[in-house]
Amino acid sequence: MSTAAPPVRRAATIFIFITVLLDVLALGVVIPVLPHLIEQLEGGDTARAAQIVGLFGTMWAAMQFVCSPALGALSDRFGRRPIVLLSNLGLGLDYVVMALAPTIGWLFVGRVINGITASSIVTAFAYLADVTPGENRARAFGKLGAAFGLGFIIGPALGGALSAISPRLPFWVAAALSLLNFAYGLFVLPESLPLERRTAFSWRRANPMGSLRLLRSQPQLFGFAAVHFLYYLAHQSLQTVFVLYTAYRYGWGVADVGWALAAVGIVIAAVQGALVGPVVSKIGERATLISGLSLGAVGFAIYGVAPTGWWFGVGIPVMSMFGLYGPAAQGMMTRRVGFGQQGQLQGALNSVVGVAGIVGPTIFSGVFSHFIDPRGVQMAGAPYLVASALLAAGALLAVRVTAAPA
Image 1 (cartoon, rainbow, N blue to C red):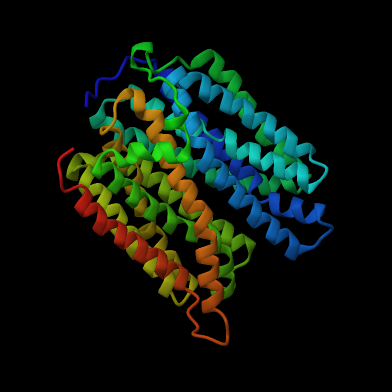
Image 2 (cartoon, rainbow, N blue to C red):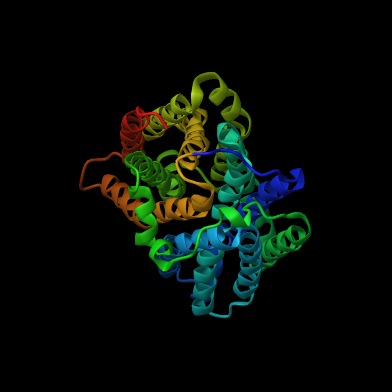
């Protein structure tokens, strides 16, 4: 595949970085307050609120699975700029709906819309693939990964502070961030996909099953998709049981968890923003990808067996090295499709991530619940040992998938 990229203003690539940062920041701002708002709307019923939070998470992932391929295909047909801008506008309006939501039903509608419109990140990856030569994409994708890390460092802390003022205020701030991003992009963001490189839209390619045909079109691409699924499935262990596990095993409170999550975010942002480029230059994308998966497996194993909170902390920098995987994998996968298929590729990959988001919480919460049951075998770290095994399997599969030349 040709890796030539059209010239683009530096301001545009900076905007794409800011888009991802603000999108993740807006998402992070509402994370600490959404469960409490649901609990408030449910009259203080914590058990019922927990069930609804799980339902919201599953529905959000399901919307990503269903809609990401269509939005990716639309960006292949009409360009990246309109999809990025409309997504930012949609997210901003959605957060307004959630800020005003008088009932759980309205809040649920807001989360569904959020799952549909949160496609600017998918399109951002396609945008960078358009404007970045193939050999430099891992470094560029690493910077987007750093934006993810920064967003998740700042967002939850900001959301927690704002919620002390009002449980609705974080939603208004998230709306403002998204709408400001939309307004900024109107003046800064040029189109990255020329007319001659665009692909006709078809529902056959744009539905989730149809988009997966692209991943099945090449054995290597399908293998990458399988590795991608294992990676994101393992990642679900962090989102699902981190708070419960550290409280149960180490007696950590909210402040301890906050510091630990901040440490994770800082290290992952540093790995993807500063380490990916030099490592890829030194050992190549293939070795970087496999190293990231392997070190992640070691880090999760440390999480699972750590007898104290301090030992758990030792695992954070080791586990965070799995951040090497994503940029290297994206760099290798984007070179296997043409310019007019980058949006479809990112949509299909996000559907894979969506499936992991649908099944992962059930798997890891079930494993955790089973292994802390006093009637059975006591092994609270079992979810992280499962995550370690998933990444180890991913590393072995990646060795095979990447053995053939691109």
